[in-house]
Amino acid sequence: MRILAIETTCDETGASVLENKTIKSNIIFSQVALHKKYSGVVPELASRAHMENISLVISEALKKAKLLPGKRRKFPRFDAVAFSRGPGLPGALLVGRVAAETMAKFCGAALIGVNNLEGHFLSPMINRKKIEDRFKYPLLGLVVSGGHTELWLSKSAGKYNLLGSTRDDAAGEAFDKVAKLINLGYPGGPVIEQWAQKGSRDLKFPRPFMEGNFEFSFSGLKTAVAYYLRDNCRRELSAREKADICFSFQNAVTDTLVYKTLFAMEKTGVYSVSAGGGVMANAFLKERLLRAVLSRGGKVYFCDKKYASDNAAMIAVAAWMRLQNGRFRSNIDIAPRLKIESWQ
Image 1: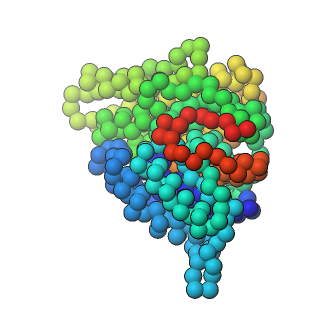
Image 2: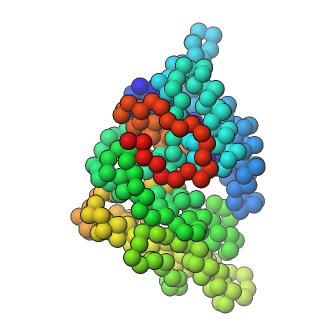
Image 3: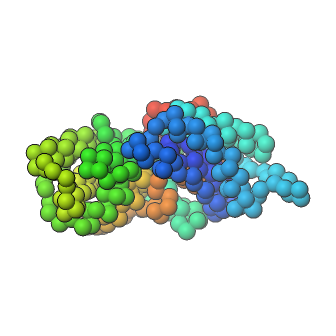
């Protein structure tokens, strides 16, 4: 089975080739440098960048997979061409869909629209470029990214139920906003993690546990940081102060995510967890979550760091799951506000 996958939900242009359960290529063009001066993604600029780079990224993915057509090589055949149909930026999603439609016609392949969030959920199945069908259902899903923080329950492949999501800021969004508050740059996740390693004093920021449900809320935590800066820092922050703020903020986010995951385990009786999304690249969060789940006799699946942020390899895996179950047809309309969806 050979799949070409395309990812353009936000600010990464990605293309990947999956063949016989092996990731042959996974090319990503990041727009971080473009959006850095705005401390966040500018949708119109993101869409333009996708249009400028999508053909180059696809060509590079084919080249690395040794499938790029030439004088002596015919255009490659694929079983399917997959793309992220949502959630994401409307203009960016449209670029991905048009590119996928074009490639599907050239390759004589089925066109499959994939939920980006399902890609994050399934990304831990990739181990050293190989798909390992290692999930044991039922399975909880913790998806933590720049735009989403959600808990899922999956009873079998393709069957998903949303337990809870963020009511305001996602965890990754909160990282970006706090980094902006203390002038650390963009994106906020990696830089806050680096500074947090130098911190030691916990400033006791609130933990938005929201007792009794599976929902998240990080807007208040971000505001607590802003109030701390207003009330305690009337001059330029020292390196020690920045480190302690990052240390405390990271602790608060981690405590919240771990608490909610353990609560979901307790209430559902499901003790296996798939953890995906860009924020799961945070080593401190991964260690704390792993220890907490193992202490309850559970198991947690993490994706490799290079598959944590948006990438086309995870989209290829999501398409592969559908094809394995005979689901060659899917909705191909873009859906900027797409929610969790079952296909079984």
